[in-house]
Length: 247
Image (cartoon, rainbow, N blue to C red; front, side, top):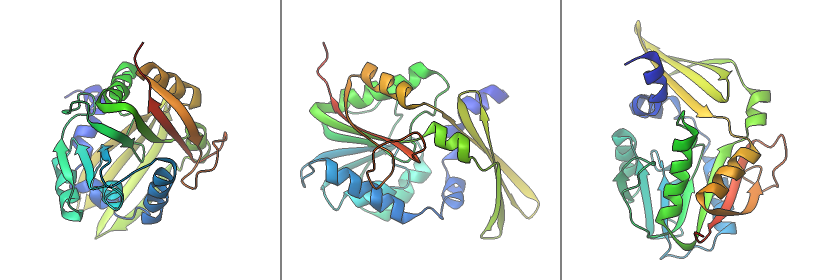
């Protein structure tokens, strides 16, 4: 595969056991705060059908199980789906967020912890949103938790080095055009493995335009997991939207 091909398909190579190792330190409080924000702003019952798209190891989906018995997790990575199955009883499906293997069935779809903007073609990222719109029932809710581009640009840490279970992990970050890229090197006993993360830096107005183009009506915009209104230097860019009827 060419370098450009490797970059464009980074998500197929990265989300495996190494991903779980690198992010084992993630703050569970953030996940709990985010789920509290969701359930505070969306009416959820035990019968509400919820899709956590790009659910990873189920960190958020497992918390949503406290409110609904019908939480579905979808991810492309078999490794992450296996870990999610170990974490709690979920309805798990392997699939691509550009072509969801569902008919219209959900009252709520969530895309959490920057599980959007993976694709180098803006049209493909728009297709993802259109798929979320398609699988939602009438008046269904879509909740998008994304990074705030201006905050990332101001606070980007160029390099971090740490050791996890005897493995040296070096993360090097840079902004390339309209994307933020992270090169991850994992070294153990002289052996090195390299991975890449690359996410489109959509700003507030670009994401609003994409959501509207996909058929969503924006209800609220938050700037953090405590539900504060979005401002230029908020750490997150979080949308609460509803499904509009197609014209």
